[in-house]
Every structure is written in C-alpha cells, then in structure tokens.
Length: 213
Image (cartoon, rainbow, N blue to C red; front, top):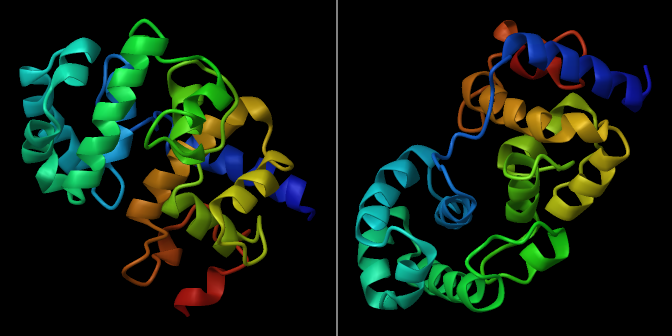
C-alpha cells in the first residue's frame, strides 16, 4: 500500500469513527479563534474555553481588546500559562486587526502569518475553520499520529510534516482530517500513556500497531 492509499483509507476510517469532529476551541467570531489558538499553546483547549469567557465579558470586541492594557489581559489569561507573552501577542494582534484590517481577520494565509503570535498552525486553523479553505493543522496530535501510522517517516518539524501531508491528503479533507486526529490522539493514540491499539480503528493499517504488544 502506498502512502497515498494509506492516507485515503485512514481518512475514511476516521470519518466513520469521528463523524462530527470539529475544532474544540469555542468561538463565534474569527478574531476570537485567533485569541483562543494563541492561548492554547501549552494549554488545554478546555481551560482556554473557560478563561476566554472572562476575557470577552470584559473586552467584547476587537477594539475593546486592542485598547485594553496588556497587564489586564495578562491577569485574565494567566491560568493558560505564559501569560505575559500571550497577552502581549494578543494585544498587538488586535491592534493590527483594528488599524490595518478594519477589525476583520484577513482571508489570506500570508497576511495571517504577519499577525503577532500567529504561526503556520494557527493560520491553517483559521483558513480551514473560518474560511473553509484547504488547511493542514500540524499540532502535536497530528505530528505524533502521522508518524506512528507511517504517513510520514520520523519527521517532527511541524512545517515539514505539513508539507509532506499536502502531498498525501486531498485538499478538501485536510482540515477535518486534522480535527479527527486530535480526537483520536486524545482518546486512543495517546501520548502520555501507552496507546490503546486494541481500540484503534486503523490498527491493521498502522505502522506502529505492535507498539502495545
């Protein structure tokens, strides 16, 4: 089986296993997803979803958050860890949205990358979830699972994994595929315990299926 064939089969099995998988960060506007994905670095999505409730209650739009003192943002987002750097990035990002994009999140990958605190993972998430464009989100779950499954060969660098997956994953499948990898990585192909290969829907395809034996 080629890597392309493996990718298509894995996509179909994960679709059956997690038909409704989507982004686990709560948001109802594009700028809120930008804030949440910055806060999610080295923090769980569940905690971010709780913390942003207080943040948006006090600063309900881009302008309000752009004008907020960085110290006040930091005080609210501190439970997410790395509070100072995250607060600084969020403040700068909101100012840039206000001053250069009329408060709107740009629908362009390169423009997203120019926003403070936004890297390729975040930009891909915005492109896929907000704008419905092709996207490959190489978070820690994605990187771990595609290596274990044999879709990539011992590649740990996020950008290199992304580039390798663009060659294998149909563009229209990329965003949902990555969301399903998150679900599978949390529930089955875990990082901090031995993976639960006996419960895995792709165990007969996986290059590392004997890891738990």
